[in-house]
Figure 1: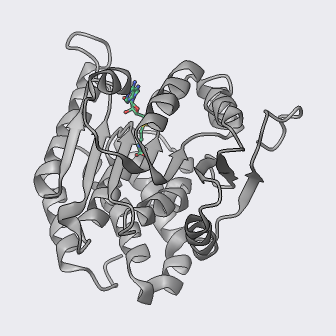
Figure 2 (figure 1 turned 180 degrees about the vertical axis):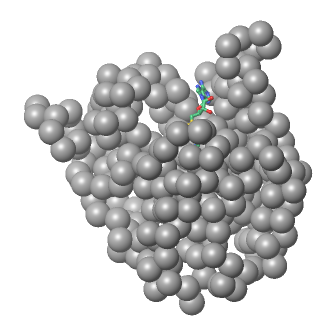
Length: 294
Ligand SMILES: C[S@@+](CC[C@H](N)C(=O)[O-])C[C@H]1O[C@@H](n2cnc3c(N)ncnc32)[C@H](O)[C@@H]1O
């Protein structure tokens, strides 16, 4: 696991992260995820990265099993899609990133880490938003841990990073800033209404040069947690204005960018090939009649 070359900054982050999360189980999950990201960081390790993917998946699954107490084999399947989004955080033409729904910070630590490594760090900005339960509510202790975790991440990854725990709905309502965002990952409340509200709000603060990722468009995740909702919203977004792709990853990642942005088309093409991610559907405009194979 430790045989490849480490970037000194990242090494520091692993150590710090391990220290502050010791005993919580989180150190394992996020560490494996960051180590995985590290491979994608280095061009020299591209081949090894692909060869190592099976092992990383296994490690990640074991780590998440330790954390949650039950096997969650599919967690390791997130690796490629998170890697793709994380790569967008390395592009200097995209300065401002927004993540709605940080959970345990598994994707977040990777994005933040990539920003930290940028030469134009001073010009970048990272906004994260989650929604934490109020004291006394059922899931309070878990959401409190998540919240603490993000605060710790902010301490050890010194970038221009604002985190809000009030929920995207309220955050957008309160947002008076003029900042436009280049990279957005929508992974908060996946109900149709919330995903739609998030998208409409996000659209108002998008830079002309932007890329937006939507998580969980697969049938399995939609059926299990919600009735095919984030996917429905994604299908409804205009194909006149945007190029839309559903990627063939474990959870099906939706990606959109302004039509005719050839630079982004080229970037996506290269990185999909590189990460061996296939396109599942291009420019979908309505939920398929037959739901098999979502
Ligand atoms: C699937 S998790 C995010 C996982 C994370 N992006 C990752 O890839 O590791 C979804 C998160 O969305 C949060 N959430 C739910 N409703 C929200 C809302 N209205 N605004 C922001 N976050 C919300 C939940 O608290 C949860 O932490």
